Figure 1 (tube, one colour):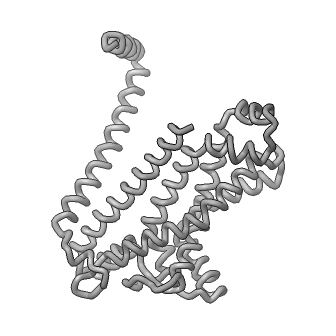
Figure 2: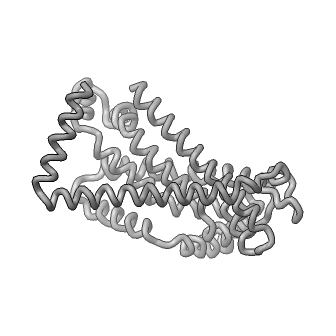
Figure 3: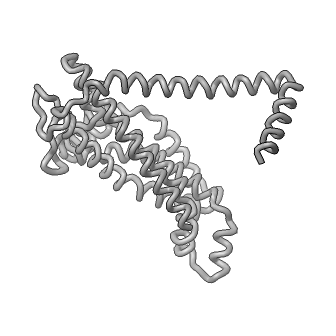
Length: 289
């Protein structure tokens, strides 16, 4: 088995060396991959080296003070903000994608307008979403600087990406799945929710993971909507800062730069942990089918 694999690699290498242009393109691709991996390793090493030595027990106190600059309230706010934003955005994104793929007629002008709008919203800077959230949720709806205003702003921000990735995941499901379900007498709704959506779960989770990464690392939109209070709010109408906002405030003040690096380590671990759990869930769901 190993001899056969080595023979295939040797044959491909000889084919590349026979054509100079193919060899040059292969080397460019390998160089780009190596540079990308090297940059990723450099960022991880830099954050860990600068931040790990400054992780102290007082940074995980449940009560923030100007002396301990605890990040625990920010961690709890981050988890709560992420869950609330996903609770709003994921159902809307999935159901919108189901309508566009399964129910809307192909070539419908309304569908084309929705897709154009979605792609446009995906490219809008987060600061614009923050200004919209401040004018609409904070001012017009009179929610004030609150977790709820921040979560709704983030849900609007990540909705286009969830919607587009879900749409592509649904399109990747073979039509034979739908035809087989219809042939067995299942209706449209049962086919979509029992056959098509379970088959598209890995692709949908990929979009959710991207949304989580954007939510956790967002600062500009939350400064204008959720505020920067370094405490755990008593309800969704209270103000609170997330880890990214906490790290930004510490570094901008210039008094606790080392603690900001420690916050970056925790933020990195949190994102990696959420991605790992999502990937594990996707594999379990795919294996159980």
